[in-house]
Image (cartoon, rainbow, N blue to C red; front, top):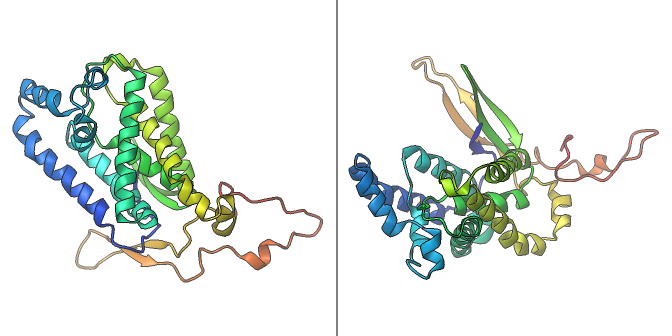
Length: 285
């Protein structure tokens, strides 16, 4: 299960998100195609630019705290990270502003590196990837838009299906998997840096907390029911007579279609008492 898009449009052009995606792609293309067939050459490159916890703690190669965020170990590593950044980055940039989002992204990446270093301070295994910084973006998104709708692609053997689920469910499952895998695996053995992901995610929540509180904290959730505070979009599948390949068109939902029915929500049914609502609850809104 992995996300392919959300229904939460941004109100400003996400220049920083696009620039970060472009930088990651250009950096990857500058070294990986020419080095992928030579493991020794690739590891030598990573030794110079990737994050090695033991070296960082000894005061060496401090630059790798930043450079490691823009390196990837393979095509799927790059594509997966850039997809997550594309889906969630524009809304956080819309919320924080261009420069604010850039600072937030880098701070999340540094926090992710700290999480991995604390998990295995003596490690000599190079760590690469934008996953930790992007995990911070996802953590901030969860705090601000817990019930934004996310389309996820589920593949079960030969069954391929797209489901729409709330952000809190998709991101909650993802974060839970990072914790479970981090606790169950031997960090000294290398592999996925689960503690970097968890550290970045927690940092993202903490860093966005001031913006959440400025909007009223829990009162912001009460006003929006955890959904984006604007019209969401729908994805309409259009089929053509001239091509067997359907196209997906993105359209704005009718104004007010995603807003809570404030007048009726205060009226309980006969013999019932309406309990408090939270952004995690279901129901019509």
